[in-house]
Structure formats: structure tokens, C-alpha cells
Length: 339
Image 1: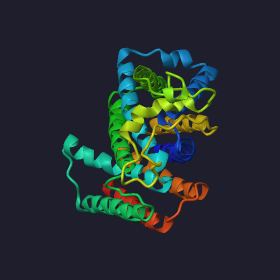
Image 2: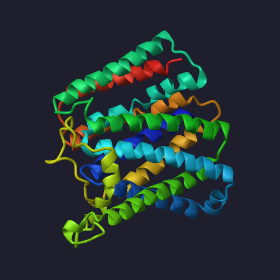
Image 3: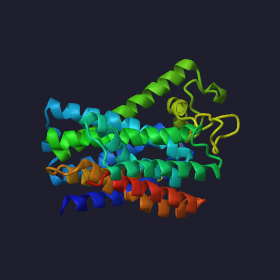
Image 4: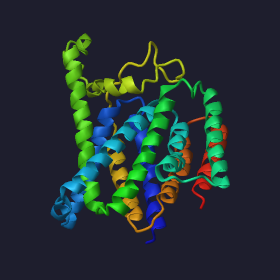
């Protein structure tokens, strides 16, 4: 298989991941969804390595690989927290195209980092991307979403920026440092579980110390007899990405209280689909000389599948305006990565 085939296969699984992610996190607590999804994805990956007999070999790495995997896990964890906060309330037909602009951000970050200068076509591409953002702002206002005041929108942009940083780091990890794909992904998954588990444990401890949740008669914040209670620990992330501000259409009455966790059977698929997408992507970009900006763009064709199926499954509206905005962003990204 060529590297483009690996990346396109990754894009398919990435689209399935986006759909499962939206179904799992919609009006749900972010951190528990992230932790359980990552646990299932990690378990599936470890099981696959064990069945193939490569687990012991893959797990035996030096400190350099552990450090690379830990840094990758931290970058991705921040990106996913912002993205899940945005997707929890924003329509998928707005949140996913914003994240699809990450290849353009890869190029923009590369300007000061590598001293690159845009060509005329790349300059036009950046203009097209920003035009697309303006068009999404225009489309969002028809649904009561103010792009400049809604924190969920800013979370979506922050997630896209972190995704761009992650892509630039991937190039170093797999092409410069020559980290082995399977070992890197194994310890990257373990690192994600540790990050999300640590954040959730810290939030539990903070809530117990502050005495939140006593309105239900429990000092630990759990509602007695409720299967949904664990997600009340998500207040830290809610504080970062609350949607209850004046610009948000999806704000609950009285502001955005921390949401309780609801188990959904789409949660395991979030982790499994993402592990498949990441393995295919890492394998594709590990080849010598693979351009990371082109690979990043090719992977984001997943947004077309997500946009079409997401609009159908989640019954979203205002699709013509959003479709035109998406087209402007995709054209801009294509021009930016043009060589």
C-alpha cells in the first residue's frame, strides 16, 4: 500500500470516530466519556498485540520512546478535551469542519517554526479558509450561535490548533526520531489513560473537598442510586468550556451546570475507531519523506463523510449555508498545501 492509501483508510475510520464521538458526548460529561472511550480503545489495541504475539516486544522500549509517547499523549489529551467540549453542544456540521481546518493551521504554525513563506496560491488559500470561518459564523447565527461569544466555538478552534501542533510533532516523532509505530501507539494509549484518569481523580478529590453534591445527600457528589452520577465530576472541564454564556444557543436555563455522566453504547466504538484510524495514520506518515501537511489534509477528507452522515443521523438544519462554508475551507486547505 502507498502512504496515500494508508491515510485514506485512516480518514474512513476517523469519520466513523467523529460520528460515534458526537453520539457519545452530546449533552454528556466530557472526562468520563474520554476515559472510558480511551480504555476500550487501549484494551482493543493491547488485545490485538497479545493475540499476534508482539505485546512483549512492543512494550519493551527505552526512555526516549516513553518521553515521546508521554509528550504526544499530553498534546492530544488537551486537543480532545477542547474538541469534546465543543462537540458536546455545537452541531456536528459546525464543530467538525472547524477541526478539519487543522492542516491550514499546520502550515501557519510552520511559517515561524521553519521560516517558510506562503506563495500567492497559499495566501489565497488562507483567505479562503478565513472566508469559510466567516460563513460558518453567518450560518451559526441562524441557529443562535455567536462565533465571537460562544465558548464552545473557541474550544473548537483551540482543539484544531492543538491538533495542528500534534501533526507537527508527529513528523518529528516518526520521521526524525524514527520511533516505531506500534511501540509509540502502545505507550501513547497508556499515557492517555493515565492523563484522563488523573484528571478525573483530581476532579473527584476537589469536589469532595469543596463539599459539592451534598444537595443529593452525598458528600462525594454522587446522586444516590443514579447511574449517571459519575459525570458530575466533570466540573473542571465545564469551567473551561462552558456553553452557558450569552453567545450559546444550547445553554441550559440558569447557566451551564456540570453535566452528569450517561453510559452510551457508542462510547467503546469511539476508542476502537480512533485506535484503528491512528494506527493507519501513523503507519502512513512513518515513511521517509511523507509531507505532513499533505497527509494531514488528506486525512481530513473524513469531514465530508461526517458532514453528510452527521446531518442525516442528528437531523441538523441550515445545511446549504454550512455546506458552502465547508467548501470554502476545503478549497483553502487544498490551496495552502499546494506545492
